[in-house]
Length: 315
Image (cartoon, rainbow, N blue to C red; front, side, top):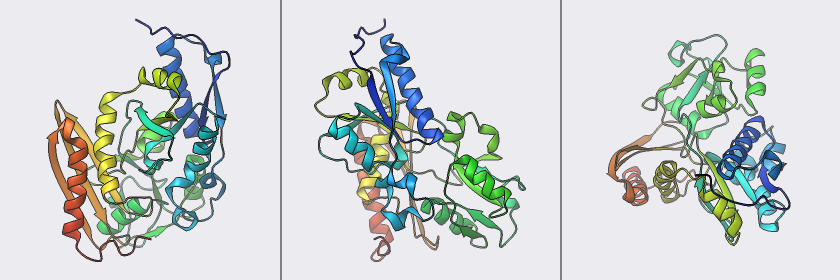
């Protein structure tokens, strides 16, 4: 039975970044809300907010402030009431949130794998020593250097179209993208192949969309509860607890993936030095209700195993 909720006098304002992927995710959120409450799309307004991370494309994220650069302006507008809810790629979200905001609604998770993208090669193994691979992700850079230290890694930022242009211009022979983003854009054919998680463990929360609201907004709370995907929430509770336990940010090469099998949650975690010279990994399971505790404990074990100095390069 469709929940009954009156159409608001003014459209519910959905804040988002303006990239093609961010807009696709905002439209997915709007569609799920419209279906849940039998409302027309006119009952919702998508509001594009340009973030610092979108404005500065010529430098690595670590040089201009880190992961929060994709959320700061959006969260400011949410707190001010300029928007009612905010739609985020969860792998861009810091683990700490501003006071007055809640992030507890997740849409069904997409493919978590990384995509290998190249105009000239079929697989990572086909790249010759010295070949250039482009990525802006410290995690992917570190994982690649751990497995293929013979390759040259160059900075690569921008949307899918921009990165494909860079490949065409010969700035690199290959790059990586998230399969989830390609699927949401209807561009799966861009991927030459999807990389198994055993070969490249994804970023924490990769493939998940989160929706943020003001803590005191009861209308938004009621509406978002209707579209929350509980299994995704359970998986992210473990992954983000793991990330928080490592003080993780986009300046930290960390990978993590939680998977559900009935009432059991399996969590795999990985920490690396940025140059790939040291990689530590863990794999453990627990009842799903203990997922967050498992994440905290795994982070503590990896910190202990890494020993003094492993995180000294984190600023």
